[in-house]
Length: 371
Image 1 (cartoon, rainbow, N blue to C red):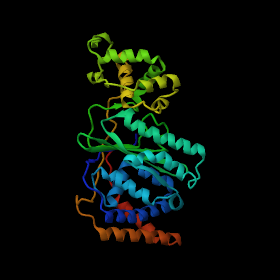
Image 2: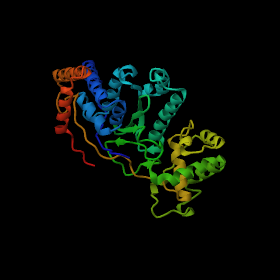
Image 3: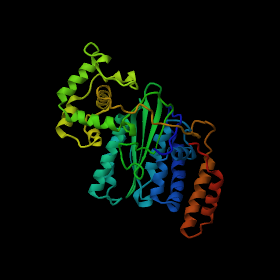
Image 4: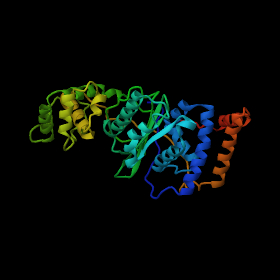
C-alpha cells in the first residue's frame, strides 16, 4: 500500500446547502480545467486515489473538514461536471441506491469514452470486486454505503466509503488502476479512518496468502463436509480448543464464528470450482459471513492464519461547511474560481504567465507529509 492515513470522519446531520453546492461546482470546474490542461487525465485519477489529496480537495471546495460528507458530497460535485467531452473523465456510482447503478452507468458512458465491450465488461467486474473486497474480504466493522468509480479511456480510480453504525464514523477506501494491478493482494492506494482497530480480518494482506489458498481449497471440497466442520466449531459442546492443533500465535478472537452463512452460495462455489480467490469473491452470495467462516476454519484446523492487522493508517484534514474551523468564504471561492478560469483561457491562447505563477506559488505551499 502507498501512503495511507487517518482522518476523523463522523456522521454530521443535515445536508449541504444549495448555495454551497453551486459554489463547489463552480470552483471545482475551474480547478479541474487547470489540472487537465497541466497534467492530463491519468494524473487527475492518480491524485483522486490519494486520500491526502482528496481530503485537501474537499477542503479547498469548502466542505466539512472531517465529516463523512467529505466523500459523498465531493464525489457528487465531481459527478455533476466531469464529463467525457470536456475532461475525458466520467464518474459513476455514488451514495446508497445510486452506488448500485454503477454497472448501468458504465454502459451509458461507454460510447462517449470509446470503450469496447471487453472494456465495459472489465470495468463492471472491477466495480463489483472492489466493493466485495472492502465489504467482505476486509472486515473492519464498516459497512459500505458509497461506491464510485472515476473512469477515463485507459484508467480508473475507485473511492468508496463504509459506516460504523455503532459510533457513526466513516472509513474511506481508495484504489487506482496503475497501482491496483492485483485486486486481491494489498490493492489500495490508501484507507483513511477515525480509529485503528485491534483486530481486523484482512484477507487482502500478503500474510493472508496461505489462508486465501486454503479457503479456496475448502470451497472446492464437498460443501456437506464443510458444513459439518462449521457446525462442530460453532457448538462448543461438540468440540473444544484441545481438539485442534492451535499455534501459540493464534488469537482466541478467531472463535467468533458467524451465526449463519449462505450454504447455497457455497454449493454454487463448489459447482463452479473457482480458479482464484478473486473468482470466489465474485460469486453472488459469498459475503462477509462466508469469507470469515472459511478464514477461521483455515486458521483453526489447518493453521493457515489470515492477517488480523488493521490496514488503515494515519492522515490529516482541514476545512469548512459547518463553520469548523471557520465559515466558508463565499466571495473568496468566487474570486478563486474566476482566477482559475482566466488561467485556463489565457493558457489556451499560449499566455501561460498565470499558470507559471501558480506553479511557483505551489513550491511555497506544498504540505509536509509524515510517513
